[in-house]
Amino acid sequence: MIAKLNQLSEAIKKALEKKQNHLRAIGLPNNEESIVTEEVIEKVNDIGILIGQMIKMELPEILDNHIPTHWKQRSLSWGWTTVIWLAYVISESDHRKLPMEEYVVGVQNMLSGLCGQEVNSKDFTDDRLAIVLKHLSNPNYWIDLEKELNDKTIKVYDLEAEIIRCDATSSAVNHQVVPGGLIQFGHHKDGTIKPQFKIMMAGLDPLGMPNAPEVVSGEQADDGLYVPIIKLVDESLNKTGLLYVGDCKMSAFDTRVYIVSQENHYLSPLPLTGETVKDMEAWIDAGITKDSTHELEVVYRQEDDGSNTQIASGYEFERKHSAVVDGKEVSWTERVLVVKSVGHAEQQAKKLEKGLDTAIEKIEALTPERGRGKRQITDEGQLGTAIDKILKKQGINPELLNIDYEKQVEKQTKYVGKGRGSSNRAKSVTKRVRFSINSVTRNTDAIDEAKKRLGWKAFVTSSSSDKMSLSDAVINYRHEYRIERIFNRMKSCLKLEPCFVKRKEQITGLTNLLSLGVRVLTLCEYVVRRSLQHDEATLPDLHQENRRKKTNKPTAERLLSAFSNIFLHIIKIDHREIYRSLTPLSKLQTEILNRLGLDVSIYLKLEMIKS
Image 1 (cartoon, helix red, strand yellow):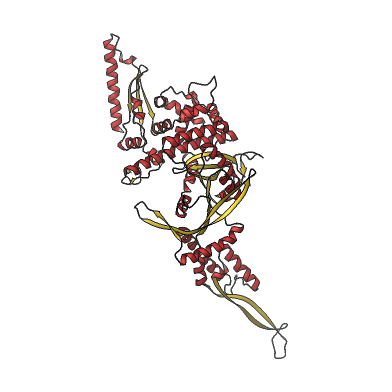
Image 2: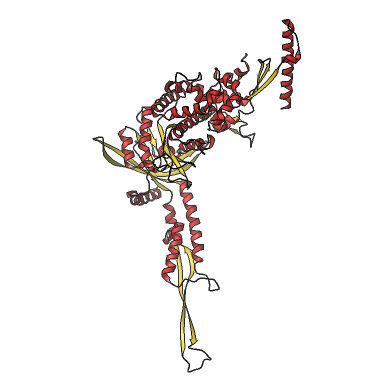
């Protein structure tokens, strides 16, 4: 920093000398006191790479193609307004409209240089940004906009949009609940008791790019949201033969019927409800038998070092389905994949062992020895109820434990009445009953049999085995985390929560805006990883906690964090720019730009602009 200040001081001196020499040359009075010197320092950081990436995606032009303009509109188009705002949102993790105008005041020269046109703070007033969200919330604009963006992205980045992942998330807010409004109380995964709205989203493999976000009221169940989102994806991609992957809520029969009727395919697990509960017992029995005879197909995962690790095994069978859609009968063959996951089985086995230990401890504590404050169980039915309650809470089958208890009766003889006893005096006998648990032991044979039934799950798919094997299906479903990463980025990196807009159109527009931001992050990450994999190379110095660590799978967030402490220095004399200097780009920053297919001139042109 001291070296940079010294460098800047020298630059100012040279600039002053240059100005003074110029005054002498043209014969004007050389009065140093009349020379006004101004120094401007603007933070650039990752704004350059973000705007460069969006330019490569042709996002400004695509937005301008579908968002209408007004004859009184300012010179900066809606497309460029959206791109600059989105770059700020990603860089600063702040979607609020109010700080944007003040931010632009401090980096006006930098933004004008990156965009190649004059950028004014009045282009980013609260009202103007609210209009951006209003336009982005309009389905008539958004559907066509997203369709063109998909076409360009898939073509430019050579993507194969064949697998679509669908899922929903809810976003808790502190807004007021209005009957029939967007904000409603509903089920939340983390148990939050707050009003919320829901986002249904589709993600395009292989990079997990968001597509067709749909904002709905918070009380709606997920099951009914799949068909509408699938319709939006079909309209956006205009392609058949897609494979839709989702959780068990997507396996509703009506959803499967619709997907098949549109000449697409599905892959999802079956929920343990209805007839599936009964069928699953027989399917697991068959799986255990096939496992004993080594007839199960083994599924392997390839590790980074090239080795293979077994992650599952299973078998499959087919069944026929038919339904009537719009007056036409639709028939298809469905494959049922009965799979045992190694990791899931181990996890359930640990849970079972923990439940057994807890149940044994609590059952043994039911019948303490007699003593002050030690409540005794005197009824066998009461003891049985207490044991059943413990087993149910721990999820333990009663057959897995052997519980031995006995009834203890103590007799006490007393003389009737007061005074000393005698041989002829009447006596009374009272009985004190208590139940005592002697031992609680494990039924090892039953536990071993129970563990064989752990980890099993049934999947259904309409895709044929020649297009997707059982192993492919398991691997495809295990990539479901990609859709979760979209939600995670929207909530954490782009700070959808807490949501500061309240009207429905503003929340919908903001969700669509942030989905564009996730697209930018996803493409940056995917392109760099693909380039590194192709060259069998790694990037260093991305982990501050371990500078020596190298990676070939950097996240977009770490890539952007590498573009820190980049500043544009501008020196003005007599209100004229005579000197521009940009913090030199490091070797790592240059390599990241090259791997993204972006020219370093995105940054370097900032110090070449002269006024």
